[in-house]
Image (cartoon, rainbow, N blue to C red; front, side, top):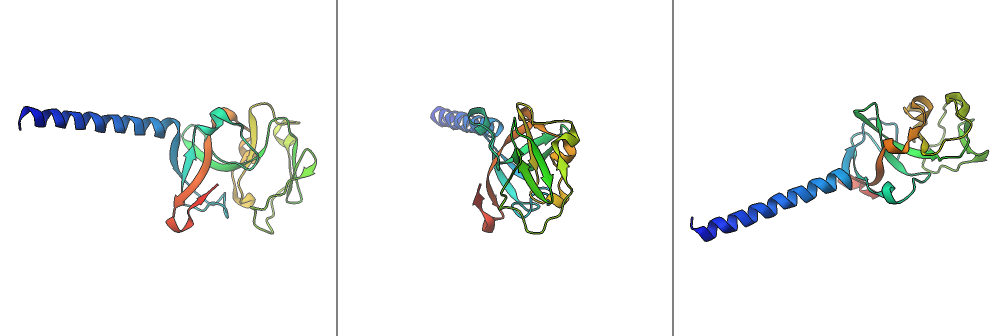
Length: 175
């Protein structure tokens, strides 16, 4: 191998290292991949589906009702849930219906005939949702560990918004 060959090898190696560093920065701060574990979000998301997560969106935009998010729970576990209640709102679940500030929340993504217990925000010690806190629920309300059990979720515990399901390939979808 002559000097010119070594020089080209070093250039290619530097390009590869830079590519890997840029890819790692993107994966750590912008996008990530996550997997659904369990059925708490069915029928929207099913067990073992693989999703893309936008980690940067909430640095620039507000969290919205209906967003499907990944949130940190118990330091090492992540949950995937839907944002239902926003800061400043009161919330009640009565007769299998969610009411925000006394008005019925239309939820087309839920299966029919779900039955789950009544709930009031006061059950976890709040009249309204405080600033930078959110009430999240799984779409499968009968089998979901969500804000009814774990309490309100602070904004800093929300890792990002699910924006695409890419596995299985026959169920690719943008959210």
